[in-house]
Length: 264
Image (cartoon, rainbow, N blue to C red; front, side):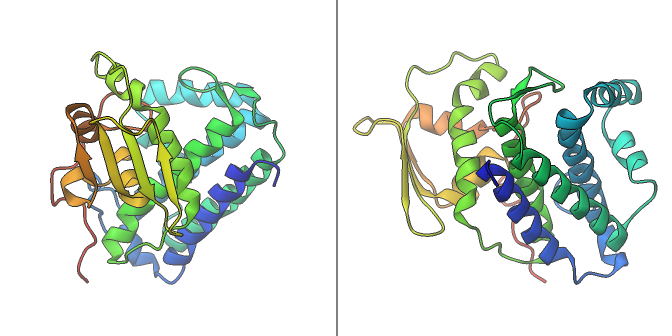
């Protein structure tokens, strides 16, 4: 694939598929720790927005019509549910995975810099498929947690790390706060053991630890207190307290101890 993020998105989808494949239909009705969403709800959400990303490249008029439908419905959940026409469980898994493959294929052939229509500002094709990877990884977390499985991450989560770094300023602006002049120095250990660094070393502001912990904080799938990240400096502490790498209104991270791998 010419755009590596497309392959990374597909690989992350395949990893989640492998987790879900052995389950029977009844298992998909169980609620997760994310707003009480069931596994069916998670898959409906991922499937719909993977399809919407595919529409960015294939049918902009239908994309816009779908955005209008969401506005008329007062939110995305009714539209996501209607889109799968009642499919649940293993049938829904198949529908979701087929669309994930189609979306990955479409973006692999796209110009990474192509500007695409979206609900907010236009975005590049690379940004769009990276967002799909992030969403798949983030919503996958509540599935792994609910099933009591500790995820074995791969270095493709670097895409999410970069997204977290790049949304540093936006996170503050989205909360109508002044953007700090300098981003903290970030030192992260990848799943492979490689060390990734961002920002300038030498200052008092510093975040250090596992890349997957950083990803969990910026996607708000864990409270900072439930990770092993070492954070120093007021800016770093404030950022990690409400970091948000996904679009939309400011969201509140889960309280300490709420999001965790369930004992089964």
